Length: 332
Ligand SMILES: Nc1ncnc2c1ncn2[C@@H]1O[C@H](COP(=O)(O)OP(=O)(O)OP(=O)(O)O)[C@@H](O)[C@H]1O
Ligand SMILES: [Mg+2]
Image 1 (cartoon, rainbow, N blue to C red):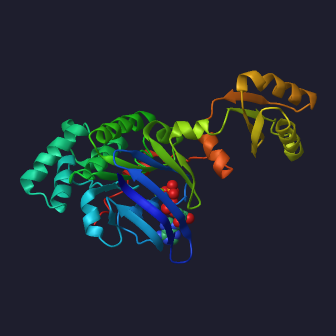
Image 2: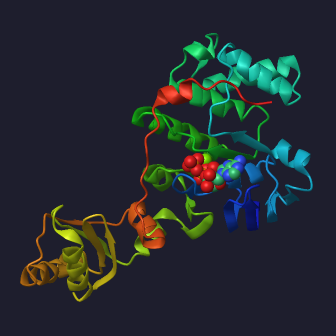
Image 3: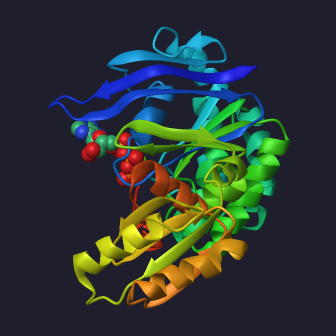
């Protein structure tokens, strides 16, 4: 059964920015579903409409059969939300943060204390439970933030870039918590700029760019859908646009080559049967005297899927943890 459904969702901000431009998707109960896209793609805007914080300009978003715009209170009871900026109070301990959150959601003090103790175990913060959150590392703060979104036992969890700013080790640890949560029955809708995160965590994902969904599906299907292996021919930096165009034309004429794309000083093609057809490709480059700096043959990644459907590579600027650590609680 669908637990989250968006139909033709549009958000135009005052001033005219069309941040979300006709987005539709369905998340089934039990899934981890991801929105993969670059800065400014419309991920946060979509999530904020889903969690009742922002009214759509048009279109519909429905949680568990309930229209978010019409019945926001009922929707809020069913969902948890961890925003892109960490929302923990640095002056409180981890336990106090969780108890406070539980009280805000209407738990009695005893229920809130019990829930806090349970969640501290789940997120591996039991040993640090009574330390001020201000002394925590970025990974610990993210985990605490995640736990805050869980105090009222939501069936659907919205996570806006849950691991941005974490180092790879903390990122992997958080993926494990999320998998465990999902296995315990929580459906997860997350946004990410990280290809690997989308690949390993999401059962299905949508690639979003400029407010539109470009393609949607299981990561393996999206990659297989490219129809072969990826060959990237990189030219020397000084080769120039003419050489790039010529390389493009040479590759387009090689048997088994399709979907030729150019970016920076490289040309990427899909080669239907990489291993068998590679020799022909190399001969064609050689015959045309293409100045090759590097040639790579690889199985497709989600970045290749991204390139195919958006015409660009997904470039991620790493956010340094200190930026996140300085943020103070902003929840009302
Ligand atoms: N309150 C606002 N008023 C006007 N424009 C906005 C507002 N919030 C976001 N935008 C614009 O809407 C577009 C989508 O922004 P959004 O925050 O949804 O993207 P995002 O995919 O979450 O990006 P990021 O990865 O950087 O978090 C961007 O062009 C952004 O500048
Ligand atoms: Mg965002």
